[in-house]
Length: 350
Image (cartoon, rainbow, N blue to C red; front, side, top):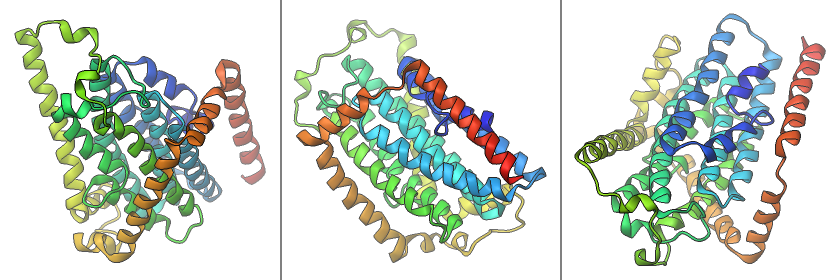
């Protein structure tokens, strides 16, 4: 289990992922966050098919919920756009792990729903944010402004991905998070995920200012690659890149508009023998008053928290958190402590 959690970048086994994102080219980051860290979650699926550990299920729910919240707290303190997205990958994997911890058809289908949704919108986020920040020559979310004027297409695609990950209705993140919350039911760990949702909204309101800020596009300093003439090959590659990003954006919309059909398919894939919970019966049931009110509370809470992040005390708090870097030795100690805790938990429970 420790090896799976390390590969999935679940806290406290997460320290490798933000630095990997910071160093990798943005297309690699899209693949890393969109697909590579999802494979361990599917490995958990197969393990639970053959071996059932009820105590392990409960542990995974709490580890997943805690990872979702701690990951988003770390993301909010970042000024490097790619590190911010990297910590959000850790947070979003927490939702997936919590759903797998619930187990059964509902938990597995919700986790698979979230895996597909996250692969779509997180890949799109890395592609759009990575491209515009690379061209601007900076990844500093506190200084970049007005990129939307220079890159309207990337901004529109980013908007679809950002609305998805923050859980705005009619987009993939809303329906994926709702599927996870329905699988968790009245489990108290749900409130950690709800708090993480507010933090996610605040983080992306912060990140979105690089596109929508007041600074004019003429004040942005383009990166050196801006001066290289475009070759026919690069134009063709650009067409394919835009087409691929458009497919990801379309997937984000379809999962939000047609959630019932998607969840029914995921239930068939996990071999539950039907459409699963009543939530899968109609897309209308996904947009009733209770989940919409929760989405509204998340939006309002995120706006208030985002205002704090850009205030002087908020910037000071974020700076203090960034300075508390673990480093290599601290990361190794945290990793060792995590493995030790899992071993003792297994010895005491099984």
